[in-house]
Amino acid sequence: MIGCEYVNLCATGVIGGPWLKFWTQAGAVLSSVGMFEAQLSSGAFQLLGMADLGLLPAVFARRAARLRTPWVAVAVSSAVTLAVSFLAFDEVVATANFLYSLGTLLEFAAFLWLRARQPDLKRPYRVPLSSLPALAAMCAVPSAFLAYVCAVAGWRVFALAGALTALGVGLHGSMRLCRAKRWLKFEGQH
Image 1 (cartoon, helix red, strand yellow):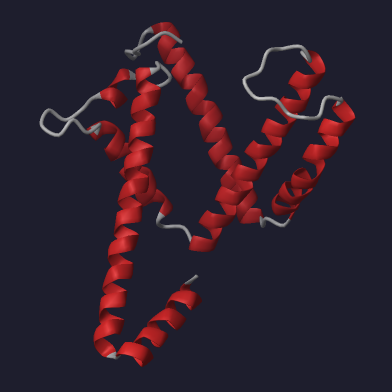
Image 2 (cartoon, one colour; image 1 turned 60 degrees about the horizontal axis):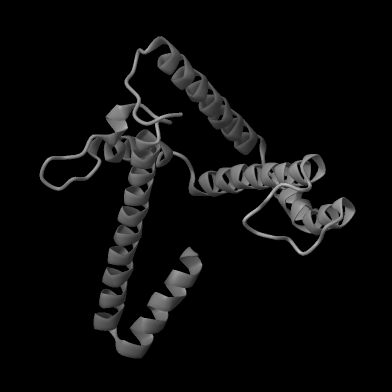
């Protein structure tokens, strides 16, 4: 990615001169800042939605009085982003791909399990295949690619993904305990 940006900046410098190179760089910086802010906002509003559904403590649903932004969720999203910023970029991408691959493999397994256990369950979307072997064959090709992504990950990616998975399981357990003991306030019914 950086190589492509460098080539584009060199091309703009050759084609339009230094002024075009400068404005292309400025546009790239502003675009990156905008994409970061959009990602940060979507993460914050996802935490807000989870709090509204009762999956997270009600404190995540607190909004600023003037702008109505979920300030606690924004602060937590910013803290997570700051923590990840200390990692190498390739490790962040590899870990994200690894966790995405595991999640997708889990979705395929759940899809096949539900088709085997409850074949007559009413579903909002229909898959044109009906037999379980055909459905397994349909999931096999993408599953092979996802398994390859998991297999080529290095030990740091395995360690980081394992730590994040353990953190998620631990947070889920602590949220259940906090709900049962009424240590934290939760909104909604769950």
